[in-house]
Image (cartoon, rainbow, N blue to C red; front, side, top):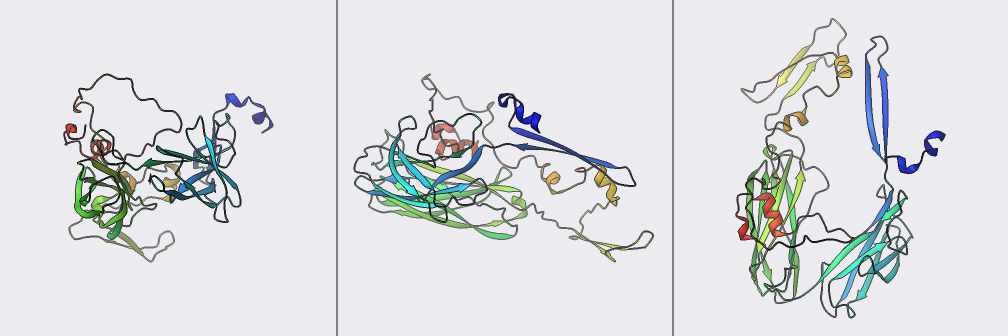
Length: 376
C-alpha cells in the first residue's frame, strides 16, 4: 500500500480493479470474480428545492436549498452561500445556514433584476473551478425565467414536466402519473394536456385532461392520470405529455418509468418434500396457464458455481425484445433542414441541462413518423 500511495497521482486512473477467486473444498471447482470500483471526489451536493421557474417584476422569490453528503444524509448546521449572475462573475446574494434536515430557506426581492435570474448555491464561499483530483461538493444551479407576454419572436418559457418515480412500479397495479404545468404570458382560455404511454415502440394508452388558463401572467398547477401497469409494458415504459397553447406554441416533456420484470404467463415450481437426501424420491409440481409450454431442467448447484450467469433469467428474456423504447430518428431517414449555416452554439459552465423539455427534441425521439417541419 505504501508503494501505491507513492505513485505519481497523475499516472493513476480513478478506478480500483479488484480480483478474487474462491475454490470449493473437495471438488476443486474455483470461481473467479472481478469488480471495478470508481473513485469519486464528490463529497456531497447542494440542490434547489421548491423554487419557482418564473419570476414577475416587483415580486419576492422564495425557495429552499438542501445539502446532503454522498450517502444522501443531510449536512446539518452548515453555511450555504447563495450567488446570482454568471459563473465567471458571480455576485453574493445571501448567506444561509442549514437546519437538522440539511435545508435552508431564502427569500429576496426582484427589484434590481431585469432579466432571467441565475442562482448558484455552494458550501464554499467561492464558486471557482474545482482543483484536479481534490474532494469537493457539487454546487446547485437554478434559472428563473422572467415573465413576459407570449410572442412569436421569442421562445416560450411555458413548460410541462412529467414527474418521475424513484422506484420500479409493480405489475397489475394502477399508478398515478402527475404532470406539472407552467403557462406564462398566455391569453385566458382552456388548454388540453395530451398524454401518451409508450412501451416497446408502441402507444399503449392515450388520453387528455383540460387546464383552465386564468387571466394572470403565470398559471401553475398539476394534472394527473392513472396508468395500469401490465406485463406487456415491462421492463420499462415512457410517458409523453404535450399541449398547444393559445399562442400556438407547443410545449412537451417526457419521462421514463421502470417496472418489475414480470410476464403475462406465470409459472411456479414446488417440490414435495421441499428437501431430500441423495437417493430419496421427490415430487415436482409445475403450475402454469392452460396449454403453456414449460421447459424444466435439473442441474447440480456446482454447475452454477463453475459457470455463473449462464442460466436463463428474466433479464435474458427481456434482452431478446427487438425494441424496449424509442431512441430517435435514424439518420438515414431524418429529413434535411434547409437553414443558414451558422456557428454552433457554445456553452460556458454551467452546462445546459440534458433533460428533454424542448417540444421538437421530445417529438423527435418519441414520434419519428411525424414530419419535423411541424416543429422547426
